[in-house]
Image: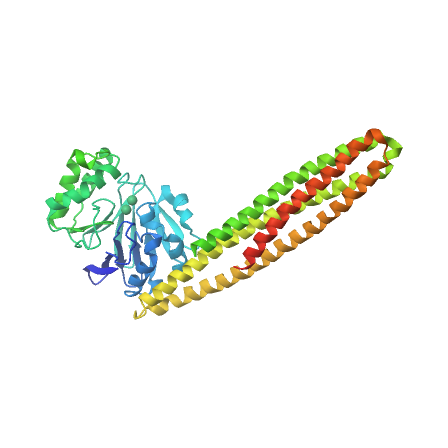
Length: 248
Length: 203
Ligand SMILES: [Fe+2]
Ligand SMILES: [Fe+2]
């Protein structure tokens, strides 16, 4: 599991974990993110059960385990949060922030110690030490209850499955050529995302944010102008379609 | 790990299923008891010796049903304990990997407390698992002993039947055969369950 620093200021640090060499081949590669503040930390989309040991090992190289007081799961998918039963043992006094609609579903992963903080549909704010974070609604992209995490100071949007690309663990961390990158994202967005209306609603909401880096849960991070390129491309894309790759 | 755990869940589920079957047979047995009572009533004085036997059949059925029920309950608890045990074992295994992968980390000690807590939990679960298996095993022995009486009961029934006169003889012998048949079927299920329990004891 590789660790990469995305942002650092007096108040906090953003790290990305991913490109796990130890990962079994048949499971999708995922990116995990953490915001470390003075006394606390928020671990976002901590990943699947198969990844837990690698993740915890990577995390513990950076900070003591009990400093992670907050977890975030953008939605209920197994690649996002099936490791919960184990985090529940490792971080018994942490709080999990996740969409209200998934509370009774996510608890199936095993949650006896961690407490659940349900995010309302309209989103909410989370202040950790001096750091202000926002849960931005991203419903139906692809999950029917889904949020992004936005940090206005770092100008980072953790976008979950939005902007995801299916590629190998050797792939670079950042998008280098947007046009070339499209082929790795197109099917994922068309097939997994069900609603054009929800998509356009999200695009208009996110356009108002000042973003330097858009960080998806799979694939590469979008930087600078590529963020705007992504928003334009995504807005024009028709989603909720099943199309055989050969028909393109 | 997964093969082992599948096994013990399957074992526990099979024990519960076997005892369910035993309950159903015991319910038929109590039907037999009321049939026997009706025949003995019609046979009047000549089947007087048969009446205490019908009470005995009733008791046997009742004990089997009651005992099956409590074994079933025990099996359910055991299944829950097994699930918790798998979870605790898996957490420990995962932490062990972390201790290897991040052995040079300055923060590795921060896991000690949760690791110890998991180990304590694991030991507690092991203890209650063993206790539950013991209780299950005791219950099965008790039930099995009770069933031994059924053979004696059937023999006695046959003797009584022969004294009840020709027209009731067949019906009463039938009762005796039913008791014997039911008891041996229940016994089969118990034996199978006892084998399962001894497999569980090895974990
Ligand atoms: Fe997803
Ligand atoms: Fe995903």
